[in-house]
Length: 130
Image 1: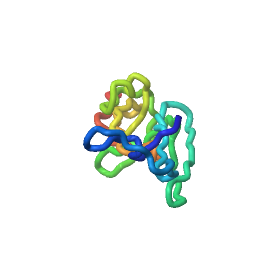
Image 2: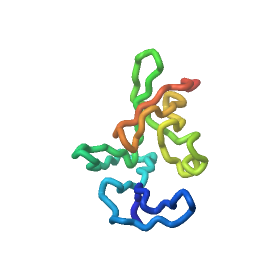
Image 3: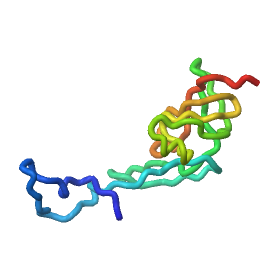
Image 4: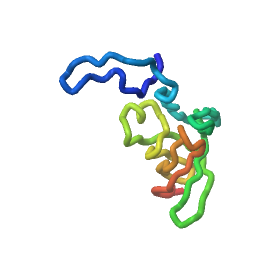
């Protein structure tokens, strides 16, 4: 079953059923989420509207962590600690924007959109004690 973002399936204001006067169009097509996981780096290139491309991260082990003062360090992700977007994403260990991951340098909040940007960036929340 495909993901569809058209409005041919909606009802009228009166509650009556609308009958589609045309077929579905390609520009109304949607896609399933990428659901970036922890693992070896795997990227997927997806052609989008206008002939452009989105780079989707299927899985990755590294994050570019900024300390907030302009210094950026490439850190290895150890585990996904929290995902405020959904408890189901947290349970499955899916990395999205806003996820909090534990790295070898401390806890990092993801600021990029790995399913659309093709890069994992984050801000260091608290450095590790060691």
